[in-house]
Image 1 (tube, rainbow, N blue to C red):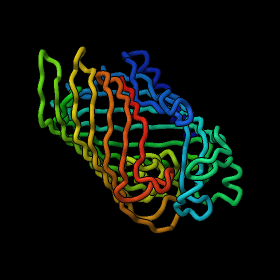
Image 2 (spheres, one colour; image 1 turned 90 degrees about the vertical axis):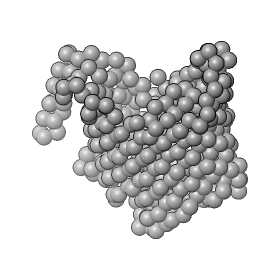
Image 3 (cartoon, one colour; image 1 turned 60 degrees about the vertical axis):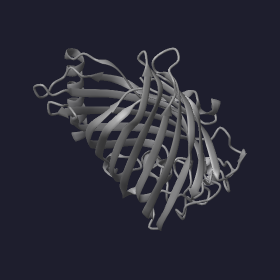
Image 4 (cartoon, rainbow, N blue to C red; image 1 turned 180 degrees about the horizontal axis):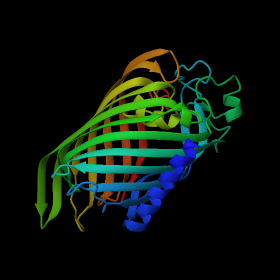
Length: 368
């Protein structure tokens, strides 16, 4: 009865907002499947509508978001399903059909509008499917079906298919001014997301995360309003801790240490706590014809440290990973970047490419 009442009140609020508020298109992100056109074709998009005409407080901006996602993605996960130890070969490789929906309210504070508070709800439905490359031998081992991988039991992953419910709060401070070819200032954020077991098929966790970003334009040369050459120094520090008896893969894919250090795999080094730093030196090339169309070369140095217990186990683990490298991309205003990244692994190993010190990947970013 309580769930029905909450749903009814939510629908009433949404109906009221839809009738009396103006909405505009909002794009959040996209994902590709690595086995489909090397991940360059979107197989998952999160988008929706945003209303920025609301004002809960005089002279303070309020944004209300309604976002949805439909996606078909691959997951490549490295924990043993029975013991929970971090594997170095034969990972879990499977495809996933994903639907999710997000309702969020972002309230700006102060006359400068640099501070904001966010509260939101995200629901999801995930369906696990056998990988489209079952039986294929990769560098990390032969891809197994789901039934084969879990034939010995499943004490770590829980159900891969089901409904998820997540509630989140966040604080953002933004004093970072970015253009196509320059960036100056700093920004900071802190967030708390949790998924209570009462509302989930396979989740019981709390995620606490903080991040600081800073940038400084060291040199810029322009001619007739177009960039000839610019150099930008940028740094990003991320810290996270995840607590709970059932941490879902949807959370692990952004909190595992391997997802924060370039050159490593998304689900690698899955410890409760991690801290990572990404340092960039960006060289933005000339805009020969149109503003916002230019090549970019980035030299980077990343390092991170993880500690605590491996997700959903009592196994202690800790370790340092680090990489350095270069990426070359071509930017189309703020809408798209496409190029290639090559990372040299200074400390640690990417088990998807065993023994390799150089790890490369195609880069593609799309935004609106």
